[in-house]
Image (tube, rainbow, N blue to C red; front, top):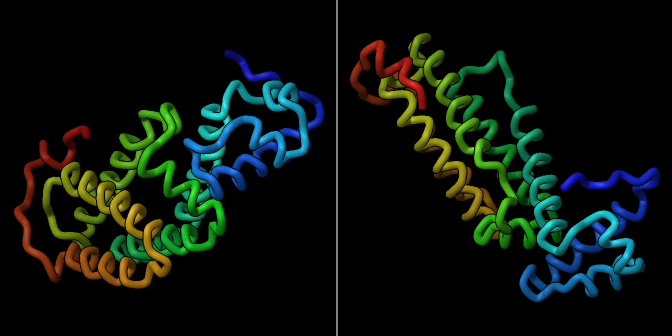
Amino acid sequence: MVRREPKVRDTRDRVLAAALEVFAAKGFAATSVDNIVDRAGCTRGAFYYYFESKEDIARDLQRDLWHRLAERAQAAFDPDLGTIANLKRVFDVHLGALDDLGEARFFLREGFLDPVPGASDGDEPKWGVTLIRELLVAAMDRGEVVVVEPGALAALLTGLFEVATTHSLEVSDPTTTVEAIHVLIDGLAANRAFGRRPSEADVHLSV
């Protein structure tokens, strides 16, 4: 269904902000459309002008929050730094951004552990693994990172990213999570780890 785009978006933004507040305070399951419109100070008609259901608005909120976090993490990448330093930098910025979310943190935690159906695109995890794999292949070619099958390592790093996100959303201070991640990433350095040299077919294997 094509979403209608009104000329004025102030009401939509107000409804989104209200929904985030109510979801964070009551939880997704306990929140009703009436709760959202009461907080927003609008009518049910106005709500349904922009959104089909509370699931619809929750999906929009989750996508928006995750995309904002992804943009911050990607902006942290510094081409003048090595791969190991950049991996740690991206993790640091992402986990720090989670800590800065305020009330949105509670909604994001609930959505991450029990996502609203359709909240994330199925291609996003594949895209992330593919991007990390490309970075790792280049780093292996430069001798920065231990040589192992890059697709497997990319998948494991993506999984680490998800686990670190879950843990950081559950604790108040991400410092210990960051420290543990740094130890693991430092272990990927070519001068600190051991690995086999994969065949050309390994390195260029599609994920």
